[in-house]
Length: 101
Picture 1 (cartoon, rainbow, N blue to C red):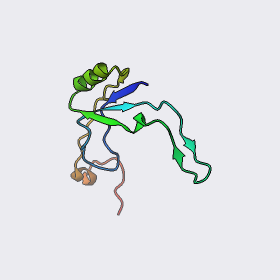
Picture 2 (picture 1 turned 135 degrees about the vertical axis):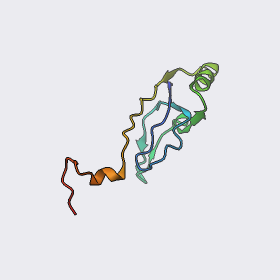
Picture 3 (picture 1 turned 90 degrees about the vertical axis):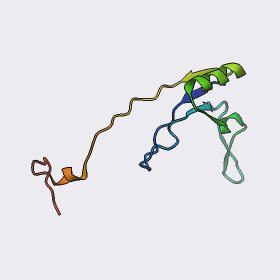
């Protein structure tokens, strides 16, 4: 069962970046989920999928995976593009779009 080491992305519903600074080790699913015929709930016998280990650095996560003999795949985070914006730009004289209110 292969593990994935990555840095999580920022939540799209929040403006802050909490929880995106640590590296995460997550296991890939080894078996598919099945639907319970009586209740309709989904279940799986894969308990490793419930694990989500966090580390301060990528090297710590890789060292843990190698020490435990877990095959892993490291996904590097994408570069963050910051576009500076200001509220005053909505009222500029040379604004391209029409300002309607």
